[in-house]
Image (cartoon, rainbow, N blue to C red):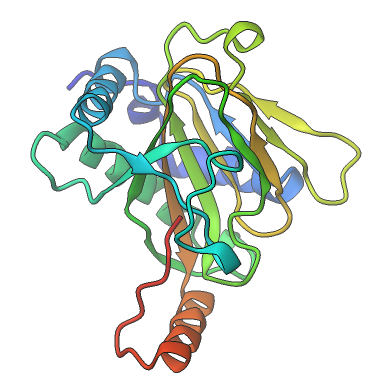
Length: 239
């Protein structure tokens, strides 16, 4: 596969000189032209196949309303992928790059020690004016510490299509608007430091999200889940 900018760069240098400082200073950062046109197209085509094949289901709310579909609050359709499924080679390649980037951040992520992540959540907003109201990914200590979103939308015009991810950094006097343009990769802290929303989308909007877990917080969350349910294996929601 032709190498995009991310593969030509020193991933460790990118992690330590850009991602880590931005996360600590701003709480978020993004990289454009991450995979390059050819590889990015392969990811996009697979996502389109999943959508066209009816394999995406309504996104559900976590927390007190877990398992409940509320289209006026969250309007995306989703599917979970491990990257080993048939036809998902490009997605697997993307995930391996993300893992390497986060691994390169190492001990410089403050209190966090990352050694696992969620599956990839493929999401589509169908373009009917739905979005996702302001929320926090991890408000209750489920282990998620870094949210990573890869966008797949070509020729996206936010003035026309909407769909901006708006972040409300805690304690800051500004907001951050991130357009969901093709081959853009976004990182931000998953906890209460970064409430965010997906503004209404008026064109089909694709993204893929993974969450990286802090080992200690994740283990504690699984322990609490087991104590509450009596189940031996914890199956906490990843979205």
